[in-house]
Image (cartoon, rainbow over all chains, first blue to last red):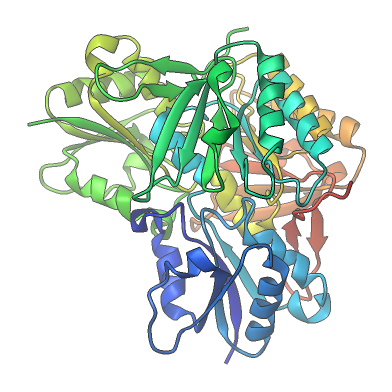
Amino acid sequence: MTGWVKIVGLGPGSDGLVTPEAQDVLAEATDVIGYIPYVKRIVPRDGLTLHASDNRVELERARLALTLASQGQRVAVVSSGDPGVFAMASAVFEAVEEHPDTWANLDIDVLPGITAMLAASARAGAPLGHDFCAINLSDNLKPSDLIEKRIRLSVEADFAMGFYNPRSKSRPTGFERVLQILKETCQDRRPLIFARAVSTPQEELKIVALPDARSDMADMRTVVLVGSSQTRLIERASGRPFVYTPRSVLA
Amino acid sequence: MTGWVKIVGLGPGSDGLVTPEAQDVLAEATDVIGYIPYVKRIVPRDGLTLHASDNRVELERARLALTLASQGQRVAVVSSGDPGVFAMASAVFEAVEEHPDTWANLDIDVLPGITAMLAASARAGAPLGHDFCAINLSDNLKPSDLIEKRIRLSVEADFAMGFYNPRSKSRPTGFERVLQILKETCQDRRPLIFARAVSTPQEELKIVALPDARSDMADMRTVVLVGSSQTRLIERASGRPFVYTPRSVLA
């Protein structure tokens, strides 16, 4: 039997956002590997082994996937959102480089999914409708100086921004600092969107002007979108406003 | 009857990348509006009117959608990829602002899709696995100086980059200039990925080192991904290499 590893994006939470291609892979897999809450989304069936592991063991998870595939298993590594955006795809390739002669020649594919930033953007309107950037605010894997530098340059470039992993229990203060930098450099009332658990029953969306943003508006399940200087609100008689960034910037 | 507008992302081309949510909306719509090649992807059926229009008439298309929804029609505005990424969502909200009192209170939703940049990234490995930005290289709607400024700042921030609309018949030279700026500022052999028509029968992927990149490697159906300084290749005994950006940057 020829094994494979398919690194699958499950989207932000709703079954309506899981691609048919991802569903097909899950139906063919012998093993599913991932972070506990993502593996919980997989319906158990005969012939399928579920390997759920805790956060921050991405490389161990990747090595297990590559080992099982080498033995002929059909392995789906599942991520929330898109596996190529601050998720398992890079971790698997990092592990491949530990044994490139064997593991690099395995059948490995990445299957895209709806990433949290774009699901949040759709819910709010179109805040990422012009040029934008995506920054992982976790300083587990990079220095906080680099995060700060990227945010300052992104403000100067006038990108809209999507922030992943803004805040966790082990990192309570970094996001506070990010908001302070934005307030000092932007000096305006551009909208921020705190989008939590989009497309799940726990979905919450808060839209606030930059001066009113507070770090405790975010948690581990939140992505934060920051408008550019051009991002606008459209007020509505009922319900929350639309937030969007126009396509044009005048010369 | 209560009308609505749903702005739907069809993904990059394959039916396997159309979300179930998008499929459901298309099954309920009375009208589908979009650019000719995207509307061609919709299977005709009784009770469904297809409104296909040419490129560069996004606002007219948006006004038609809002007008029909005001009259009680159920309108799907279709985009390739994700409608919130250089596609129809912002155009619809621009049109809403022409008649905010009536059109802003319509039932309008944006449904995310797999955007070309992330489909291309998945195909190549995980080049966008660390912080990245997305830039529309078309200067139809913004000055070319601003494009140049954003690219220089993105290099300084060491983002990986996704370029949409790199080149068309009416803009033959802008992308040439972009490549020249990258070559001058990066001074390395980071990989570029020219990803054409990903997930369609016309799919082509070229991976080249920056000094070897030429503007004629891109056309209207290509997205271009540019690695950061950290982006790596994993060579394989057969087939093209994996391209990925590690999750970590050392202090």
